[in-house]
Structure formats: structure tokens, C-alpha cells
Amino acid sequence: MPEKNIPQALGDVLAERFGERLRVDPDLPGLDELHRIAGHRVHRRYLAKPVDPDLLRLLCACALSAPSKSDLQQADILIVSDQAKRRTIEALLPEMPWLAEAAVFLVFLASGRRLPELSRLRGKPFANNHLDQFFNAVSDASIVLATFLRAATAVGLGCCPISVIRDHAATVSALFELPPRVVPLAGMSVGWPAQHGAITPRLGLACTLHEDRYDDGDLAQHIDDYDRRRAAVRPYARQRAPKRFGAASFYGWSEDKARQYADSQRADFGIFVRGKGFCLD
Ligand SMILES: Cc1cc2nc3c(=O)[nH]c(=O)nc-3n(C[C@H](O)[C@H](O)[C@H](O)COP(=O)(O)O)c2cc1C
Image (tube, rainbow, N blue to C red; front, side, top):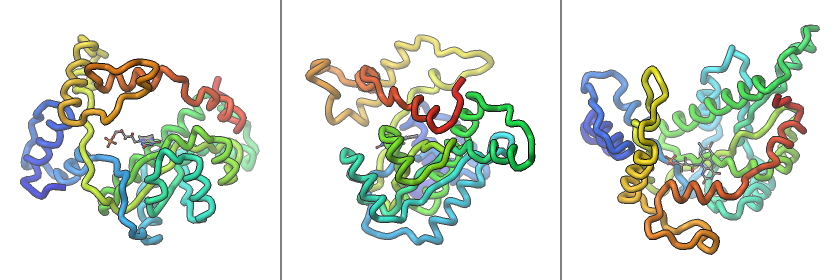
């Protein structure tokens, strides 16, 4: 993080992110934390330096301190220490070489297993076998993942969530012996960053911040504005699927995401989740 005047630095980073300068009260408490949050970036290059297991445990405990829907506590973290298991995951995802560079690999789990077990242990009916249980477990796991990112960033570590492990959900499930109603949300590579990393601009707040009613105005125009703002600072290095879609004269975020979602991804994930015992109705 640049150690200039923090209110100024926070304003700068948000301007870079959203293309808009927000007012920052310099007397606000916690500005350094806001600056860290606003300055978020994933890290995919790491130093060959280990992460102390006690530090990792501390960060996981901080992450698992995150709020939990109805205090149901439906999230777990799995630390992959076994090198053979690490190599198996890396071999599944050769397009992501940063997994092998990272000192640590974690898997964040949506864990719906405990609730029916509580019902059984306490001799009560389990009357919530429907989509909401899965949704709550995924929400809890997502918040724990985000909180881990914050905790790791606070101590100077860099992370990259890895949802592509869900392309191999059944293999991952077998490798880590995930019981019924426990499914992977995402992996996470963690290490000491080898590079400063870069801010990824986000859609403007006119698109994603609403008041009293949902209103994204002229969405096509907002997206075009974002494409151009983003391309000016983070142009794509290459175009996706040029054989299928040709070479675009201007290649922005919306073109990239439209091309990405022109192919079905993980259409069998629902079958996997149902197979793990969740009801999605
Ligand atoms: C749930 C989740 C899953 C992700 N999965 C992957 C992944 O499989 N591989 C990867 O390289 N990045 C992955 N990412 C990182 C995103 O690509 C990254 O957050 C996004 O490009 C925005 O960049 P930023 O986080 O630096 O702002 C994931 C992020 C999230 C939140």
C-alpha cells in the first residue's frame, strides 16, 4: 500500500476503481482499514517463502469469526498440507500455474452437514431440506472466504480464490473425503506476494449502488463507459475464442464476459450438489 496521506490514498484508489471521486472525511476512524479494503487485488505470483502454520491457523480463526446466518455456522475451511493432494489439484488445473507457487492452498466449504445431524442428535425433525439451506451454507462460506482475504491482506499475504476447482467437484470431493452435504465453494491460493498487484476497475456505482428502488439507468451506456474506462488502464492481453468470434476492434470487459458465457460452464454442478444430498427445490 502506498504510504501517502491515507484519506487521499483512499480517494485515489476508489477513483481508480469506480471512475468517481468520493468524499472522504479525513477524521473518520478506521481509514487505514477502508484503504486496505478498497485497495483489494488478487495475487497470482508468490515468493518462495513459507507461511507459518500458526499464522495460517490464526487467519482461519479470524475468518471463521465472520457472521453466520442465524448462527447456523455452515462454513468450514480445509487446509491442504498433504503435498500429494496439492499436486493432484495442480494437475487438475494446469492453466493456473500460480497454484504450485503458492505456499498454501485452502478449500472453503459450504457445510450443510451439521444441521441434520443436530436434528438427529436432539431427536427433532429436520424440516428445512430445501434450497434455502444450501443458499445459507453458500452465503456463510462466501463470507468466511471474504473475511479470510481481509485477514490475510492485513498481515501482508496475497490470495487468489479458485472457483475452478468446482469444474472437478466430484474429484475434489473424493480427494478431501467431503461427507454428504459438504461442497466446495472455492479453493484459495495464499502466499507472500511477489508483485504489488493491480487494482481492477469495477462497474460504476450508477450500475451497482441503488437507493430505494433498483435503478441502473441506461445500462448499455454504463457498461460502455465502464468498458472504455477499464480498457484505458487494464486492457485485455488477448481476446477470448477469436476463431469463433473473430477479432474485435475494441475488446472490453463486456465482450470478454459475453464470450466467456457463450459456453456453458459447470452445467453438471447442480447434479453434483444434489448428489451430495442437498435439495435444491
Ligand atoms: C468466488 C471467486 C472465485 C474465483 N475463482 C478464480 C479462479 O478460479 N481462478 C482465478 O485465477 N481467479 C479467480 N478469482 C479471482 C477473480 O478473477 C478476481 O477476483 C477478479 O478478476 C477481480 O480481480 P480483483 O479481485 O483483483 O479485483 C475468483 C474470485 C472469486 C471471488
